[in-house]
Image 1 (spheres, rainbow, N blue to C red):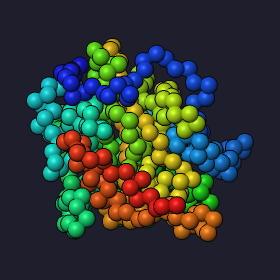
Image 2: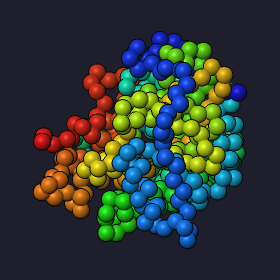
Image 3: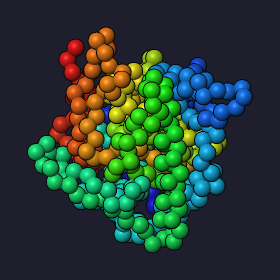
Image 4: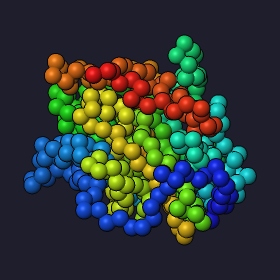
Length: 352
């Protein structure tokens, strides 16, 4: 087992955000959607189910998604082998402010340290990103993957996995386009084909002696278009239910992926779909692994409500913003506490 994190005050959540650990048995829960098409299930029904899940939850699970489960098992295996090493070995590929790819065990969410360790890698190696979050700085820098020597099959497995998840992401994006009534299912594909910034993360959440005081990941919304998450059977992901604000656990389902809408789709849809807050709770006994795929467009993408969804009755609710700068600002706060709130899409909301 990997070395445990050393508990200190930097992990402690403000009182109002500490998790309630008593089990919640929700009346309703995040929907599960079968992506397969058959005589008894049409594409139209699938698109309708996607629309309902996006509108009511911002989250859903998918089965029959086409990703080989033996590949997911191999990913979980190499993740555990990597994280089980001593901290000195893991820090040989430690990420820093210059290159955000690699190992990290000191990430902050909402200025509180997360109870986790991570390894990040790019779907497309050598990705261009803004050199800083400053609006007047037009310089770019190159992010590159750095791979550990152990386990030896680590990089090859990760690259194979990224290709499979990219295919699933495009499929889901097409279904979301159709659910928004866009005439072409590939309407948004171009934003990702040219210099996309997508990345995959391996998360390990160690057992914690004070799970009532910390969070594996603090409450947050995802900045990208979509997130596609593989999780093990331990559980811990919670979603803030739109109807009442309650934190609802997302139950692990064998061979399923959890999908959530990110900020970009919220803006593209002009608030028809919402990027929903979520967090991760930890426990005293079991380590937990998860593997999110973050579907990010190119750094030069200007994000604004799609012209097909706005009209006189539904005018644009956001001014456009540059995704690369948005990402650079978010990424900066992962490393050090900030004096001001992290950038949010609400900062670009137009007055009514």
